[in-house]
Length: 349
Image (cartoon, rainbow, N blue to C red):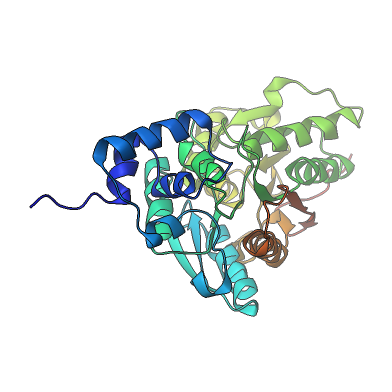
């Protein structure tokens, strides 16, 4: 006897997610016509007969009774303290509203991110909070599919071309604030160790550096930006490569970094090269992860409230879950401040 055709079989045949199939079955207007036609063709070809539960798998739950009371959270890196600290604040905000939370880690793999989304939806979570994987070659169709299915989700970074709820730090203003502080402290030779070139965070922070220079008497050139990355090893190797053979008189007086992990790598490299922080080079990080205040040289860093980020993400998501009609996507930004510690000093003339 042939096995019964499932919604997963239809999704695989049509090259879409189970949520998109269910959105078609529920006649939701959010699915693109060409996608709808492909799904309907697969249903016809496979002889699929939808069950009530399959139809309910699609978008937001239609009533309180059909909700699971759980939210799925997907982060990129389990070993990045920024995400572990943010997760605690998201959990706190959701718990106040009676929701439990599942957490998954994509490991920076966009295919794994897509599988986690499908897995969470198969477990009937009511919504998702996602720190998206943004590689140059990343296939982000699973995020667009969520939109097509009208499934509630919030992103922790903007995805180009995707109209969705986003909660993020005002990266332009934050990076600008760090460089303005250094300029006011008398620094003129300032470098920025930039993050991965394909992320909006990186582009925004570079723009913030440019704005700080434009508002000063200092001249900005592309040489002020050094491509580094997002991890400790990136900061370490970039600093070793750049500073190892540089005369002390040619060193920058300050370096701002894409995040605290990069800054920690830079600090390690400078120590290995016997370059003193902050006497020779001031170093500024970004994120204010917990270890930043416990380093041998406590790190000056850009700080934004992770509690505020968690609360805003939860608020946007729950509003989407509880809405009877689709809600207009919002981009909620969190303001930042500078936590000034021992890794920076003023330049005396």
